[in-house]
Length: 302
Image (cartoon, rainbow, N blue to C red; front, top):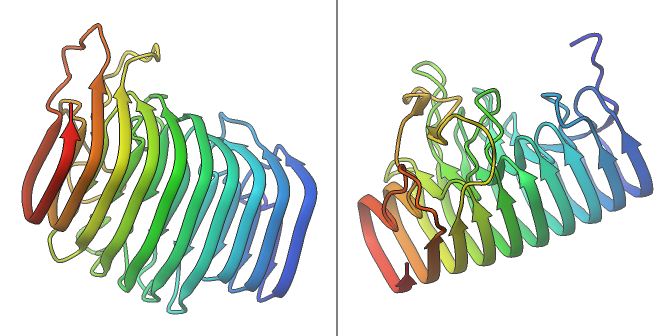
């Protein structure tokens, strides 16, 4: 990575404002905020090469009181990644009024280190347009512990398509997992109190929620409209892609409207799912739900 430097790093800083700036063609992470407090991004444009990996738009690492708003980000890797790397907490993150495009995930919340023990909580994502993207919303801790909680996604338009096996993901508008990275890199925390509300989504894959009952708790979907359609020219079938994970990294599976496995408290309210014609051979069920405790379904149509 020495010949691919990170472009801008904000580290151990307080009260930072980035406004009315445009950044293009970063070869690695574009803007990285580490262990900082009270940072504002307003009217920021980031346009990176969609073919590059690891050229994330904005990475927040163990920082707090962050606002990202009124901005446009187009990247090969994640547009916005919120990541825990150590024991300090991350909280009060607001992302609003955004246009995002990514060959990876538009928004990712995760943890990737053994000492990722700090809690991550109080995050709001709203009024966001996601288009031409491989994976829309991604909550996927892989290594460490702590609690990831009180997260709201609302008022969104999401459009996803399959870009191929070189990229993690298979066109899921919403992807939530609690799967460990490997046998010796375990995630032992909790992901709970997450709400997805007032979302219109179109994708080549459905919504995937998978973990275990002790990890995924109290997940809500409210007023969701999902249309599943095939429009990319990629020949591979969009399977379940859990990379990086000790589970089968990728597995062939039918495309269900909502696939949910191993969850404690799962709520579906005012959900409309449509499979567009012509019907693909791999289209599955409207709802494929297994091993869920305290399941509530209200007005689910398919």
